[in-house]
Each structure stands twice: as C-alpha cells, then as structure tokens.
Amino acid sequence: MNTFGSTHSKSRTVLRRTCILVLLFVLHASGFTRAQEQEETSQFGVYAHGGMNVQSANFQTLPGVPSCCPRYENGSGAGLGIGGFYDFSFASSLSFQIRLGYNSLNATLKTDEYTSVLVNGNVTTGEFEHTVQAAIGMLGLTPLAAYHFTERATLFAGPTLGWVPTNTYHEQETLIQPTNNGTFVGGSRIRNAYSGTTPDASKFYFGLTAGAQYRLPLNASSTLFMLPEVFGTFGMTPLVSGMNWRANSITAGVAVEYRIFEALPPPPPPLLLPPVKPPPPPRPKMPA
Image 1 (cartoon, rainbow, N blue to C red):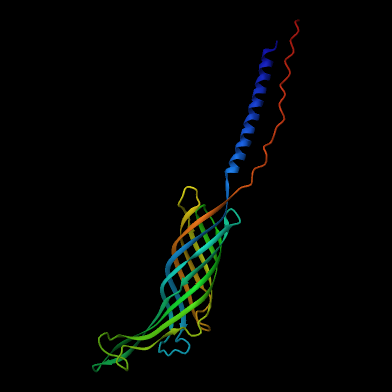
Image 2 (cartoon, rainbow, N blue to C red):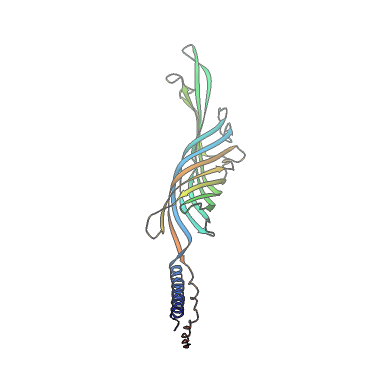
C-alpha cells in the first residue's frame, strides 16, 4: 500500500476543506460588518458668532443730512451672528450646507479734521471728529460648498444673500482739541448732530463668504459635535443706494451639530459553494 500517496491525498483534502471554511467565515463576517455599518447622510445644528465688522467708504455726507466732513473712508465695530444650518453629503469629502441667521453689521465711521483756531489771542491747532454710527441688522441666507479635507477639518465657500430690515444712523461733529477751551456757535462742543433711519438704505445685501471649521465629538456614538469655526464675508453691494459704502465682517464662534445616520442596505446573500467530494480510496498494490 502506498502510504505516502494516501497521506498526501488526505492532506490536500483537509487543506481544501479548511480553505472553504475560512472563505465562508470571511464572507459571513464581512456581511455582518457591513450590516452594522451606517452611512452619514445629513447634519443640522445652531451657531453663535462674535467678531469685527470692517466697513469701507468713500463719501462726505449721507443723502439729505448736513455735514462738514471732508470724507468718510473706513470704520469698524463689534458684530454678532446667530442662526442655524443644515448640511447634507453628496460625496465622501464634499457636502452642501445652507445657513440662515441674523447678523449685526454695526460700525462707526470716523474722520478727523484739523484746522487753526484762536484761543485767548493765540493760534492753536483745532481738531474736529466727524462720526457716523451705523446700526445695521441683516437676515442672511448663505449656501456653502464644503470640502472635508480631513475627517474633522472642513473648508467652506459660497455667497451670502441678505435682507436688511434695519439700518439707522447717528452722525455728529465733535470738538476734540483744544480739550478744555472752545465751543461751537451755541455753546456746545457738538454740532450737526442728526439721527434716524438711514436715507436711501439698501434692503438687499450680497457678499462672498469663506470659512473653516473643526469637528470635536461630544458623545461616543459620534452623533453630537462641537465645532469651533471662523468665517469672513466680503460685501459686494452698497449699504446706501448710489454710495460707496460696503460692509465686511470677520467672525469666530462655536456651532453645535447633530449628525443623522442611515443604515446601509443589507448585503447580498453569501456565496454557496458546491460540496467537495472525498477522493477515491487508493488502489491496493499488487504483489510482484
């Protein structure tokens, strides 16, 4: 009897059956794992920002408002933004987000004017400060394209469309120098003080927005996140019709996001392999 041939045939049979069992186990395990996986579909949340409004201008006076200002050119002020957002993914690293919120575009424009004045018979330098304090509230809609260049970091870019329901102003001219002497006609150190609704104020705002965000998980199931973020908006439309006066902003804050998951569809049925027939028994060796 050929003992070597019989042993070799049995080894091949055992190896073949072992490979089949391993393959079936892998197929079953992969199907189970996939069934347990979830696919990220969308997120929604709220945000709160604070920051700085930076305004650029090139005008001497508001429409119909008396002023001796030589020219307003720039201004700044504190800004506030609150709102909510909805985000849905359409690729592994890309998503679309839409934000709706309230933003304050408040700022104060200042211009100093210098002239010579007579104080107690002596010529000295006089300084007049012209100011326009603008209080502007906007409801903004911002659709953003989002690029997730890491699992936690995201870049955003898109337009901001705004409706401006409130735009008021307070303008005045203040005598700064000399500090302890001198007044305008009427005995006050302030003149040309006017306030009210800004004449010819634009109701529509359009700007270009870009930002960055970092995602920090708040729970083990990765459904709740805190997101530090920073955004900047460059205003493209004037705050007053026909005037060169635009509002820009740089803000930073925190968002809280809830992520919605959807279970993946079930996997295809496992591949069934045909049964393996045992090899035929070895033939007995005939005696010589």
